[in-house]
Image (cartoon, rainbow, N blue to C red; front, side):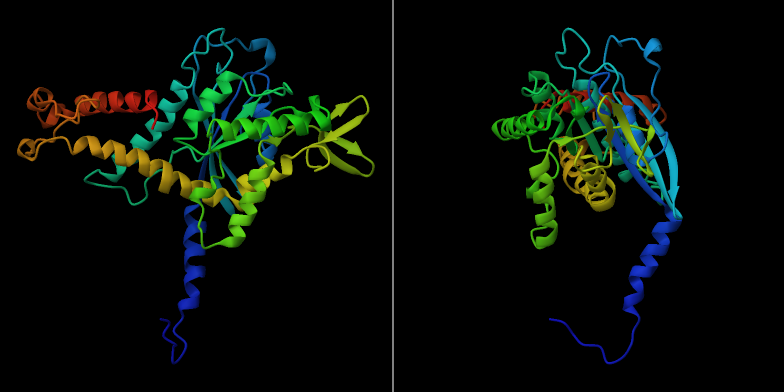
Length: 356
């Protein structure tokens, strides 16, 4: 029931109050790029944000890492007075080995470690006024432009990543395919995603059922996945205008031309229409699932073991019974830091290796 007002109160100023406070604080957005070397991951991120936010290593200096590495670079970018703290995480070495068994584990471990950091801040006795958010809001997964189908490693990795992070698949360097090949490739990938129940972003089940406009917009985005993209930070002259693109024998492949690739749809979704939703799904779906599983383990500690000395959450997560021996041997207050850190690392690794 809505009660009418008898005069002006000023409730309409709430949006302006929220806007001013948000502008003072700035915004945070964390993106991860996953894919084999040479697919243009750094170039695409630089093209999306029109700045050098992802550093590309010279090809002559590049060497294939023996394992998957995690490298994060943070920047503060500004547009029309709006500050955005952007963190870009790259995964050099992914998919570049002869044996790619369990190549997803370092990636999942990194994502879960960011959830663990946030959880530690939340349950801390003296919490900060504003918790730094390092949680990964968006994972752009780069698919090689083979023109055939998803590789087995792509299927296995995405099946696991969609359980803990928002995954947006893209066909890298799509200009290597003809338009007919591109459409067939996209149709094949869409079918494989359905067959293997890989729920990439946007997942329609996580949308606000009351907002039909948002649902229709995301349904159209879903139908376009995976986006066939081309990235380039090089400017070329086409007629009377300068455009971002890649020069080919027949002319210039324009990055921001919808007739050439779907880069605009990707950028619009990540920044202009769905950035806030990506953050909300991360917080309300993926992080909540991690938080639930993490705190469920703490419930296994018996109440009679709780005292003035904080107990270490060390236990065997596969065992329904608490590990009384570890609880009993919990170190004194001055020594708890290392014990808690070690046990947290064990839990994060266990969650990363299991399918949530």
